Length: 177
Ligand SMILES: CC(C)(COP(=O)(O)OP(=O)(O)OC[C@H]1O[C@@H](n2cnc3c(N)ncnc32)[C@H](O)[C@@H]1OP(=O)(O)O)[C@@H](O)C(=O)NCCC(=O)NCCS
View 1: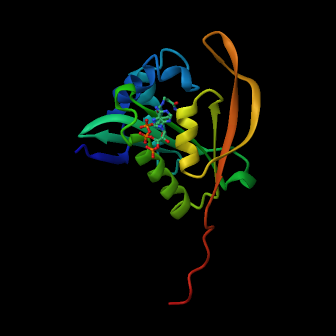
View 2: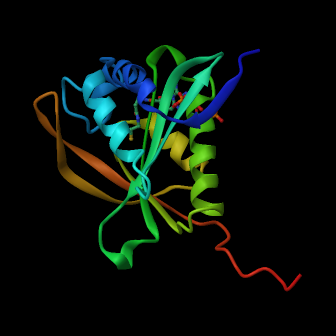
């Protein structure tokens, strides 16, 4: 049986990020720009590793090989939106359908719910990306609305759904010990 491990990403994972996201079946579903290569990801991962940066970058390994990544980033810079983080995820084409996406989602929801005081997780997803929507629904995300012609994909302006997930049990102060 295959083993899935989720861990924090490092600059050494830059080549895997570029490889996973550049696949012709994966790239069009993301909001990345073409030519996102190892150097670009080295710079991004180095920047988010700076102490105090709120961004989380995780990778998933399947039997020791990096096959997926997920990220949580502040949804906005305003202080009054500190309860919200935006989520992104990508799994290598050849590794999809084996639980890697679920493992990354589980880790990111746990991080948001139980450690960094996030109440609202949000994302956008192309309206024809049924596979991703099924994954998000499984973790409690709901469609909140649709943006018409939100982003360019293969030369066309395409619609996205905004989806969000509220903390299922907002934290409380524990009873005095
Ligand atoms: C969306 C994505 C992250 C899912 O990752 P994954 O590793 O395939 O996900 P899992 O194997 O954990 O499957 C999760 C759920 O997806 C759904 N799913 C899996 N395969 C599916 C398929 N062929 N069609 C529809 N839904 C499917 C199921 O609900 C599944 O849950 P279940 O196994 O409990 O029934 C992955 O397909 C991917 O990276 N796609 C390209 C990039 C992308 O779309 N990113 C998201 C942008 S918003």
